[in-house]
Image 1 (cartoon, rainbow, N blue to C red):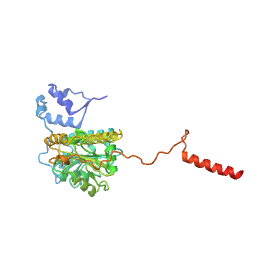
Image 2: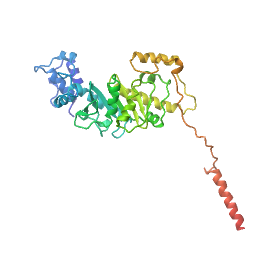
Image 3: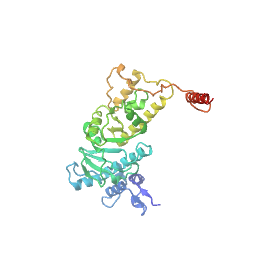
Image 4: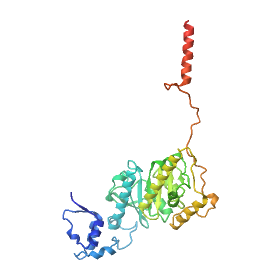
Length: 348
């Protein structure tokens, strides 16, 4: 099997003082590896120390949605964007492996310029995307570059980015337990597990609208000023990050694990325990230092843990009917016996 060489492999090679020309002739180079080799081979000589200051190649002038077609295509195929494409594909595979998406569901976007975003294509499974499948769009959803058509739900991601300037990446998917809360129309309770309080907080519910419509995007965008993760009624979840696309994905893992834990805990037959207001205040202080928004910061202690809408399960109020040893309905058995006795009486 031919060896596959990535940019990291070349960086390790250079740090070890070896010449990249010693790579096997039949080696397969990833696009980012090829770009790195071209940049390091300025005059036909590789410089082992160059990797310490290596940065992805940048366009000679800022790219905008008004740039020429050739400039946009070059930007889409640059080493700078190649790395982000690979990150999107990696997150897509993780979403698919964890069953957070099915079919060709879910979508991902990264802001790559003031008015440009990189996004996933439509009708492609998130588990099997390739870097060359990605698309460039402006913040109105118009496709600027890419061979495949952009995701049909990009408008929601773009409205989030417009409304929330800190949003650099967005992820939308359908994790089963979190989506169950969205279908039930119930916001997950708060004040139970530290991780979700620090990295997410209260998860609001946006009303249902047809996926991909501007109305859906607006209802979600209305909530992202104070929340980084939003339930979409009868649909799924969307999260944004001020750091990177992996951080947006982490929020999905945290929320889904939390919703699953709450559902299981509610079946144990004992009231669920919550933090004290003072304990939650400590977590909010940590959250504030991380620069993550939360509308509860600054609230009085008595206002912090409000779970009045939380319903931890439903118990059937119908009485249990007695059954015979064979499992038959006792009332039905008595009715059959009464009819039998009546028939036998008439025959006599």
